[in-house]
Length: 127
Image (cartoon, rainbow, N blue to C red):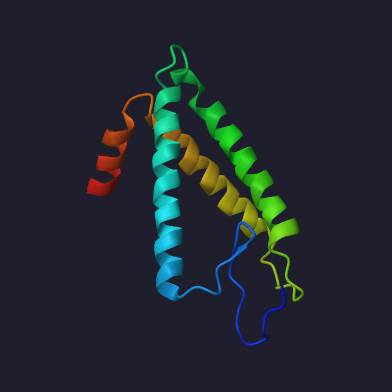
């Protein structure tokens, strides 16, 4: 699909959103994020109701991080290719961001061993 040089291309998971208005882009993407977050929380809550799973929070975080890394790599390599390559930040910044992401995912996942998902959502929004 050819795009005019003056209109930016907005690819999300391989779908071109640039033909839609900014309002439609925002509502559809925000709804998708909210819906997927609810599904993610539901599945995570079900996992932590499996007997003996509470002690495996960091393992689940590791698996999540591996999946996010692989999907991000595939997206940047195959789907979001642009003819004009942009300059990337140094790998040290990627490493800091990666460790912060692992910590965030890990600590929030381990907290499910002590809190249910609705309680965790409420306490994170209240602070």
